[in-house]
Image (cartoon, rainbow, N blue to C red; front, side, top):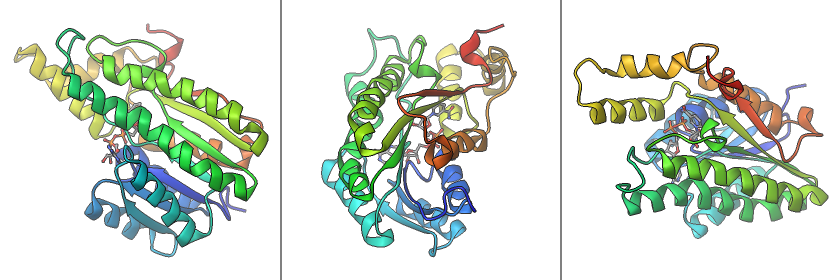
Length: 263
Ligand code: NAD
């Protein structure tokens, strides 16, 4: 039997590198997927690549309570319930020391990366309770277990969702709802390109290119490379599925060894 047969999975940030890959892998494993993101055309493209018999979408900003309620309701109306929430929407913010970091950017990063996850949990748990249980998987990061200069908003937000995950895991265990984080190191998506480009711009040195910056980051990873979105999505699949039935309240690294230290 497919690993998510009979399950309904809501995925936020579903048109991004990791979210769209998870959507395809979850659907291939038998799930019905309800996709959430900001851009309708991009959502239609991902739904089209999976098929309307297995995927639906809702345009929603995860920072907004009414839009969060709406995406949960839409999943229930289309597929009959929710078994899995992959709370994955996220933004990187900007690169700047705290003293210069724009306050509005800090607020937006916290709103998307923390409030958005909190709202998703708030509205999905009652639905999962009615279903007799479920699995919530939150995309944190290696930035959730350590600091990085000039990334204070992002790292703070990714630490915060680990605290949120632990609270939600304790509150929801009696309802059979498991809650865990997945913590990737740099992965080949738009987000890392954006961070590399910001680093290059900040250096103002023609020898420092995106490639040089990327190599410097990869060199600090024991496996000496960025991860592929599918390598993250396969861990998400495990945590979403009943194979992880004894896993809750956990921080799951998928980081090429980065959290073991750097060489
Ligand atoms: P991405 O930029 O490709 O995808 C992020 C998606 O989130 C985008 O499709 C974006 O439109 C969506 N999004 C942003 N704000 C939103 C909002 N307010 N409401 C709804 N959707 C919104 O990047 P990605 O690498 O696929 O990131 C997915 C998750 O993985 C993020 O939470 C990110 O922080 C985390 N992560 C990424 C990396 C990496 O190296 N790429 C590493 C660790 C963790």
